[in-house]
Image 1: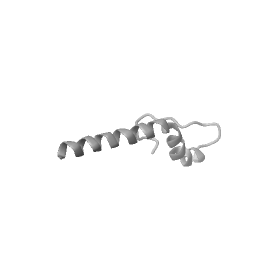
Image 2: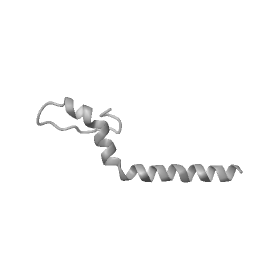
Image 3: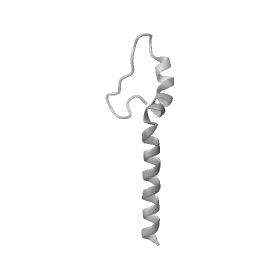
Length: 54
């Protein structure tokens, strides 16, 4: 029973990851839009670490 649950959990996490991976750029744009709105004109946002923009 534990093995079945672990397999289901793993497959569920994998399915969610694959779905979200397809929309990764859209999700990033949605999350970073407030920061980009506050940037000065003609500037860009760069990330030097994984969580540095947030």
